[in-house]
Image 1 (tube, rainbow, N blue to C red):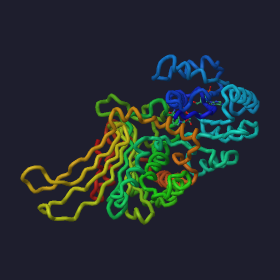
Image 2: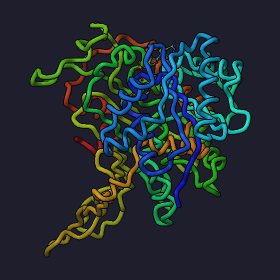
Image 3: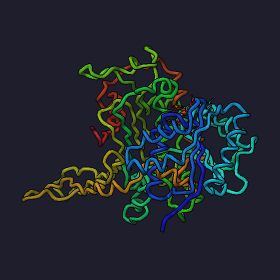
Length: 485
Ligand SMILES: NC(=O)c1ccc[n+]([C@@H]2O[C@H](COP(=O)([O-])OP(=O)(O)OC[C@H]3O[C@@H](n4cnc5c(N)ncnc54)[C@H](OP(=O)(O)O)[C@@H]3O)[C@@H](O)[C@H]2O)c1
């Protein structure tokens, strides 16, 4: 049966990159699937004086699927309002347009406000939405917020306080698009739908967990932002932490929002907070230099980057959870720009069997790999008999990969998450407690780094897998990165 969701989207920053590259194509997918149909409208707002027609053209020019007729039918639901978010009078004009569209498309008062602009303005927008009476009286009002949500715990809290003074907890949706990825969504199924895996998902069976979020691109045109962020804030505080939470949250009794939120909160409240000495021993940072063939420039030569910049473009580290189930299991994480290839994967390294039945040779550790992107699937490497007359045990791979047909069914992360907001489902969004825990964790690392001498940057070549120190981190315990590139 067709699912129709009457709703108005108001996009603050409607002329920007995020809106055009991610949000409008995602809404188009929902339109193509009938999840948005006749009863929806989108208002894009920004300061520049665009017309509705010009706005629709820009929206259409960013759609790379569907026929021209389908694109035009979709774009006809788009309206543009020139609006400075700091000017109260502009909200009065915006309200009139909202009310008109609510009537025209019979939207039942349902409104989603998307903050696709600088976070410094989120609090101002939230407050004006209430004071100028733009929130719905008869439908729902929901607010979507993008990263970066603050640059440390204190600024994130200030931002959160400004938002929750206007919106209730269940009205706020903090997006982390990693939570919308198919294979990240698949983790609870892998864990809880297989008793064999569920029973072994703990320190008795797992030796270590490795998470790699590698990017092949450099900072591109986002140098200005990156100089204020760095890899720790840009990737570890949010995406890596969310992946860890999906891997480790205790089995909830139900799949309802509240029980999943409570389970995930367990992880964030039990992140082992590192001392300064532990940071030195367990976290390394890097910055890319030019590629070996000289084709790629180094970070310090990129546009809008300080030529002496000490901002890290790579982080690797070891963290632990103070939960009985995970006692003593290191979680090795690694992320960076300009690495060998774009790759997101998780390697669960199981303990080696102690049996000496097979020629006394030391057996390899079984590994369950979850490939998130660009490939999507699982690889389970387990010991078996070497084929032939020998007696050795060797690793065999059991492999499941999404087929091309499966991939066609996978929604883009933004498409999935926008639909979740329309439906009012909170479980794939970041709760404030989780964010607070993650900020406390990375603030400790940042503070310890600020106390140290300047790092010796650049310390890895573009196109490599990062600095040698990241390999040493594991080597000192006799381990190695399963994924070598
Ligand atoms: N781009 C991405 O892929 C991406 C991914 C994740 C998170 N984000 C985050 O999402 C946010 C938006 O990013 P973006 O890349 O889309 O930035 P962007 O291209 O610079 O867009 C910013 C938007 O805000 C509008 N704006 C700025 N000041 C305004 C004001 N006072 N009143 C009304 N509108 C104003 C701009 O239009 P006018 O200049 O015409 O006002 C523009 O539409 C940022 O916080 C970014 O960190 C972006």
